[in-house]
Image 1 (cartoon, rainbow, N blue to C red):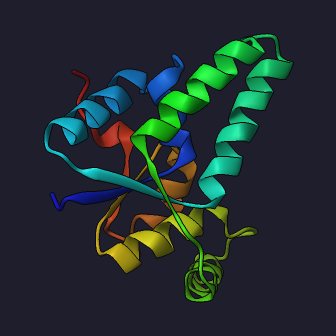
Image 2: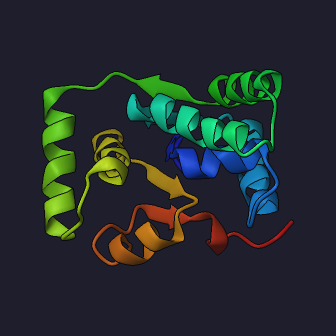
Length: 146
């Protein structure tokens, strides 16, 4: 494994909330921390984390204080990369090549390509659509339970 990985919001949320594949997601984070692997995400990550927290807040699952604590925990574990026109252009091209209706997840793939590293997701649907064309894409469900 290289010293860098791209992690998306669907994986990062599993670090702080109990969901399907939470144990595997946490095991990945522990391994990356132990091996000093830097975690990167595009700017979009910040908004996706907020949306995930807001859903839980509105559903009464967490309090505002818990949302703040979860966000701080996640942001301490990930470096948010600045966007540039080339990255967004590549995300659009990837989304088009996969016949997707949006390019959100493809921003992470474009960043992984640019950084020449793996991209880890918690989104099984996206992984199923993109894994054949993008072998650097991995899904948390591929990890054995700790």
